[in-house]
Image 1: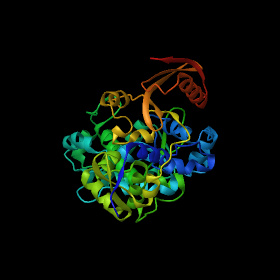
Image 2 (image 1 turned 90 degrees about the vertical axis):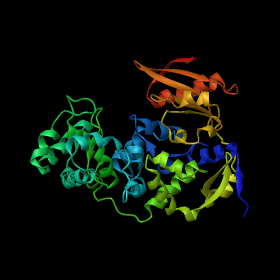
Image 3 (image 1 turned 135 degrees about the horizontal axis):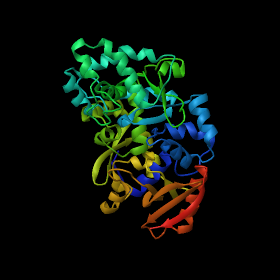
Image 4 (image 1 turned 45 degrees about the vertical axis):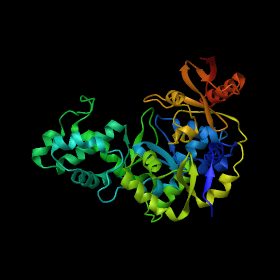
Amino acid sequence: MAELELDARQVRNFRLQAHHLDAFYGRDDALAAVGACGMQNSPPGAWEAALFNRVPACGAADRDRMLLEERTLLQAWSFRGAPMVFPTADGAAFLSALAAEGDEPWIYTRGIGLALDFLGVGFDELLALLEQVMPRLDGRAVVGKAALDQTLAAWMEPLLPARKRSLWNEPSMYGSPDKQTVGGAAVSFLLRPCSFKGLVVFGAREGTSPAFSSFRTWLGRPLEPDPEAARKLVRKFLHCYGPTAPGGLAAWLGCSGAQARRLWRAASDEMEPVRFLGKKAYVLSADRERLMASEPPQRELLLLAAHDPYLDQRDRAVLQPDKALQRRIWRTVANPGAIVRRGKVAGTWTAKKKGAGLEVRADWWDNAVGEQQVRALAEQYAAFRGLELAGFERG
């Protein structure tokens, strides 16, 4: 079979469909929409905005039902060490598939080196001690991330050699030394591996603070092993972000190249090569026909929040080929939201709450985008937030 060559338009159309952004979906599609590739919840509320853009009929009561009552959705630290919301049934793909093997470094733990050097202990030794105390989370909830770090650090302290305990309780070298100890900082990094092992999850928020408990307490069972977890994870990535390559997987997960290549091999028999953007890339063989016949989306214009999964594409030229414009979309800090027209980023927007209203400032460079269209989407977004659109400005 000849190697398929794909253009950016085909790929954008396909990815919109894969991300459930090509049309309006109903409440029955909510789990599939969240589970396509998971939804980041940092900053808090990011996943809710992402779901709103896919299933606008799914309101706060529906989200709470799935996440807090039925618990068919779960929040835990996952890709890149970020809080992610995903279907509980896919827990192994979003958690245990991320566990490091052999000499692979664990995701989101590179920064722990300062604490390890100060303490004079090894990573594996400290992780083993934390795993010993994690069962004490069973049957309880700890409110606040700082409180979780310090609670676990206090539980670990008696297990440390006596000569290390004073160092463990020294002020953190990572910032906020008045609130965090070296031990608390080390725990903060080690919580990601614990999450991947199914030892800690997010529970219900209490006020503005998240609460944390054990996987077993929250769901009534441990995280079940799944030998197909790596295959399922890579399949999700390829379906939502293909055509792509192992380097794209590494960037998406925040893992090492070695781990990405190992995971990639788990699903290699489901892939085939194509030509895209002048390079060899891979797609799921099951997606080949739909990629070739991908149709324009029913929804022409989208107002996506900054951390929407669709904007997490690593080949950014697909979304916006102009590098100067790319720098306006993806910033070092505080990314704006994106105005997306037919899959391509056509502008940016920001919103600021003011009293009971929301002020939106938008700017776009595609002349096919109409101001009334953008304003209407801003009004819908404000309503989703439970606010009135108090101001709309282009600039």
